Length: 180
Image (cartoon, rainbow, N blue to C red):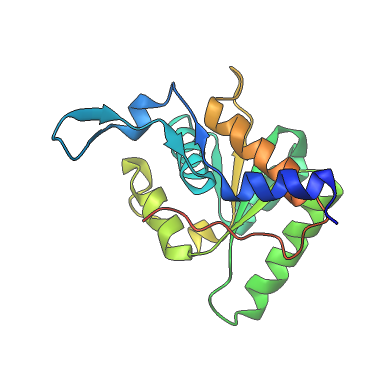
């Protein structure tokens, strides 16, 4: 028998959400009749991508293990979300860095999500002109700070998803595949 929390988490993991105020991030799409329609349903991967793009535009993203460690040591309460890519190499040093960052985030109750494809994360970051020179090392760890003017709908959904899924007793924890 499943608990209520397990059922809620399963629904969150498999569902999409409606976000009506994100038209500037989603753009218009054509339906089969050729008419322009506004997309209003998002998955967690799309919401995370929007959260990252908003953070990059608002200069709320810290990138790289060293810079993220400095931010965590100075003011961990400013961090809304930590994004770590799954490690694609057998780099022992990077594995140790990730383990330490995960531990610090857990200890300070900082939300943390894992993303599946490091290259997709890099492409997403490079989509912002200011970060066109980003490398895989740059995106080895990302910290998104809490916005000063309050969370957007995408931020709220991503944080809610984390709280419902990651604090549940469902294992293994999901790794998010960012949109291509």
